Amino acid sequence: MENILIKEFNHIPVMLNECLDGLNIKSNGIYVDGTLGGGGHSLEILKKLKSGKLIAIDKDVDAINHCKEKFKEYSDKVIFVNSDFKKYKNILSNLNIEKVDGVLLDLGVSSYQIDTPERGFSYRFDGALDMRMDKSQEFCAYDVVNNYSEEELRRIIYTYGEDSFAKIIARAIVAKRKIQPIKTTKELVDIIENAIPKKFQTKGSVCKKTFQAIRIEVNGELNNLDCVIKDMAESLNSKGRLVIITFHSLEDRIVKNVFKELNTDCICDKSVPVCVCNHKKSVLLVNKKPIVASNDEQKINKRSTSAKVRIVEKI
Ligand SMILES: C[S@@+](CC[C@H](N)C(=O)[O-])C[C@H]1O[C@@H](n2cnc3c(N)ncnc32)[C@H](O)[C@@H]1O
Image 1: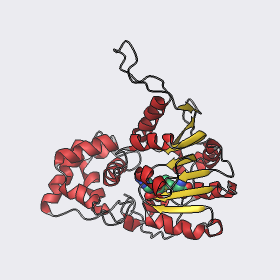
Image 2: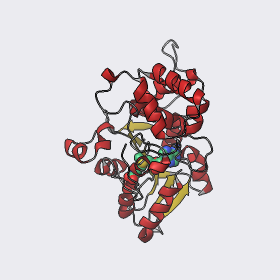
Image 3: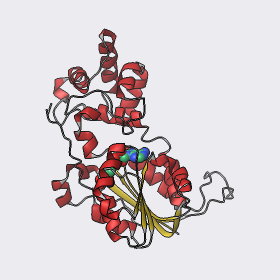
């Protein structure tokens, strides 16, 4: 385990140019960054705005506070919202905004969150079992690890972590917590490492998938993601763009399927002879295949290796 305390907000924006090109920014447009983080993408959006505005959303108050400082010279162009982007419709209506010209989502956690031991996101550092993006939320990783049934643990580790050792890990967690509650990331790491046979512990950390699964569960990352993507697409002006960066197949599958549905005229079941849904295609797919990071970017920024960018344009 690494033993460092990172206080700096360090986050290299992934596929920055691809996302900015994807948003096709107009200097007088209204843009939304639903996942502000370290503000890497937002800063470049702000630089391109003249009379336009940026609505910068993050559920992590640390991200908001950091960017308030970082964007001081753009304070007339940016509106900060410390909230969950899943409340998108309410956020826009509270601001009296009906339509926007572009929305960016860079899903998941920031490097700052991962690299800050006391946030409890990382198997590389020892910290409390926390993993909350929104620090005002009560439910945290401790609750999942100590209160979920063995079957629930297996299910989330298998579904959200796609870990074939889910059953063994869930069983080991339950056995250990019968002795005493599991309080730290280090304790969880030890349990996972002891549970998985050594011959399978060859490439990378065997804890990665379980930590990802618990994080997704704590923050409800996949809940209603499809609905909010539809809300975001609906809020776009004609020619407005929705750009989404994903980091694992579960997220990407949701984005891909929603974009496909929005790009289809009829979504009736194939067995229905005549269309009854009256669904009309509302977006065009800007890129048929997701954009991935260049080899050069992947060498500099390891996070970018699993990233995929999908973009749609409102008709
Ligand atoms: C990958 S980082 C974004 C990094 C940012 N694009 C940059 O270049 O610095 C993701 C951020 O989105 C936030 N986030 C994730 N899910 C969220 C949600 N549902 N609502 C609001 N913020 C969310 C996280 O707290 C984190 O700060």
